[in-house]
Image (cartoon, rainbow, N blue to C red; front, side, top):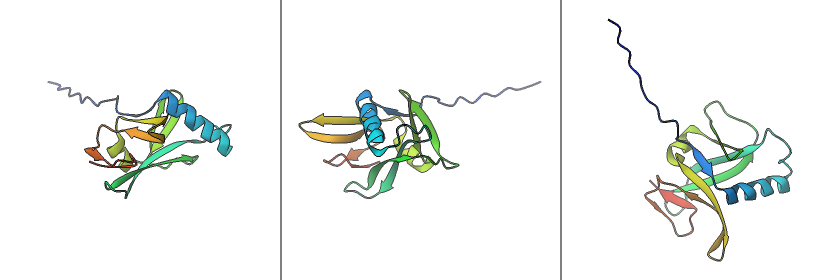
Length: 123
């Protein structure tokens, strides 16, 4: 008798980017002179600090590390390290240019609380 066991793994866990944030990232990459180089991508991460304990980090990078998690949303390559991904799973990067503040922010379903400035969070 043969017993087949299948383990289902969720494949929809990702990091997302809104249309507005994508446009702003593309503009910033152009301003930095890296938009024409296809090896560059958006690196997102989480570091200790901030008034809630953890802070978000955004940067342009062109070097993937062995344990990096790689995603693509709306044609934008988004990379994070494995430790940060545990905090960022299913998070969407947004951009606001409204009267209440201008800049990037994260819609993070994993955050139990965030600070007033939106730059740090806790789980």
